[in-house]
Length: 147
Length: 140
Image (tube, rainbow over all chains, first blue to last red):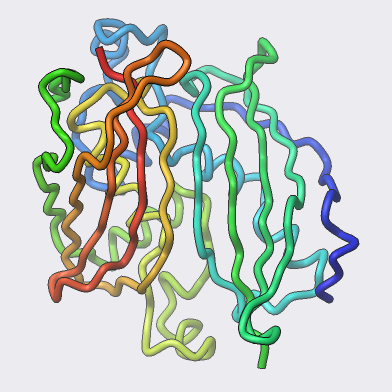
């Protein structure tokens, strides 16, 4: 149900640990052989206290916490009719191996185009580390096809 | 290995070195499903993809965005990236070869930092744009 009253709704906080092995696995899956994602000494030489996460890794944390599907399930939207339309990352500090990241997703906008044939849901998730420092903001646009 | 871009060495219109990724394999989609936490069967299960109205398995959109991320981190350490966005415009399929491109769109100063704005695109082997995006980098 596409109910604009849901704009402003916040979902429960989620918390995840960032594991060194998961970062390496992510880099391997995308075919990125940069030693920064694997070698703590290289990371230190570039000014990171431990291995940093690649730029889109924050979305993986949101996926692990089932955040994108949470919204669809909440609105009873058929997953097969939904698409990831746009993804925006704003970075404040590195996400590092060993961090514990906390996030909270909020619906910030809902609108439609083409007379309702396409509906858009925009969510924002702020990710913070174990010191309470904001590390990244994720803005996700989900597109839903009707009919 | 990361080389470091410098603000004064870049001009509007300059291009980053293209990143030509090897063809997407089904193994890569299986590995990315696990690594990214996106277990949607349409990326790994042909029958599930067809049941969803697709011609077959499609690549994760976030795989294409991760390729664009590599385009950036091949030339700057990741903590130089201030923002990174992408719009999904077309689907990638197993066997597609994606090339990532970046071009300097603007140079500005924000909050005391020297910022280079990039326009990004990920194209398949037919030259179709799969993702169009932007990034801002804080450079010395």
